[in-house]
Length: 178
Image 1 (cartoon, rainbow, N blue to C red):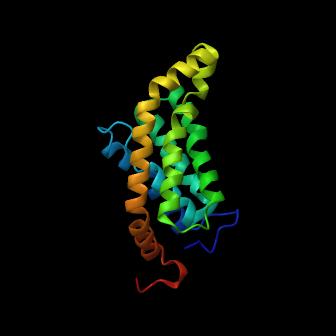
Image 2 (cartoon, one colour; image 1 turned 90 degrees about the horizontal axis):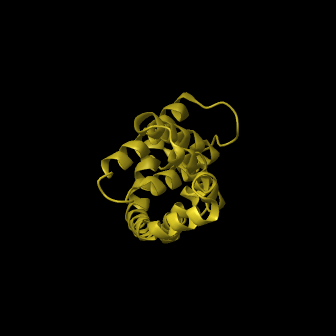
Image 3 (tube, rainbow, N blue to C red; image 1 turned 90 degrees about the vertical axis):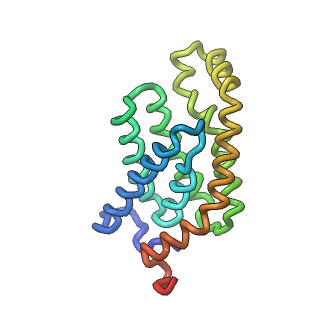
């Protein structure tokens, strides 16, 4: 399931293409589900990109974050995205050898719960310090719970099928016959 060229250095043409498409897919998938509050498949897509590409997943995350800023504007929330989504890559790297959809679903669920507090870190500086941070976070808890449940469900359901598709597309681990 792991890429054979995971070390730092130059990207191959196929890696540039694939990582760019994954970044665009993360953006498109979020945009497609935008009418649902805090329900998206970003976490599972970033987890899978990390599982297959290691640290190179940061390129996909960078493209995703840049597209968010270009389309929706560069504001304080966007500053949060600069560290929130790369942090998910770090977390996924810690568990990268895991192949359990349930464990990934729990990680994605915990990510959904932590998203709110992480999102409000930049607001700490501009919205009244700790008081503003706590008020924003407490008001956002219902959305964090929805985010948690959505991440858990999507990851549990999509992790295995998307792994299979990515293996086939990327021809990983000699699984040409999938």
